[in-house]
Length: 77
Image (cartoon, rainbow, N blue to C red; front, top):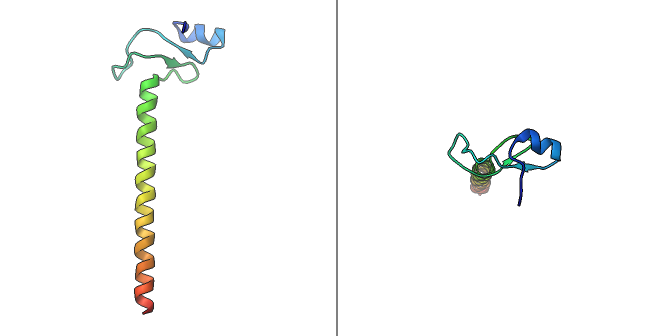
């Protein structure tokens, strides 16, 4: 795959990605997204963290709801 080497060139070419060959602030050396300028590896790490945070908050909410239900059931008896 032959990607443009600057963000400006990518915008002009209408390419969604570009590759500068330089490392990002976090040390990754991969392509970047034209719209945001974000490194693809940094985006993957951020997306993973967001998914894990959502999963943990859903799990905590389920545990709270189960405890509330159990308390209601035990209180009714």
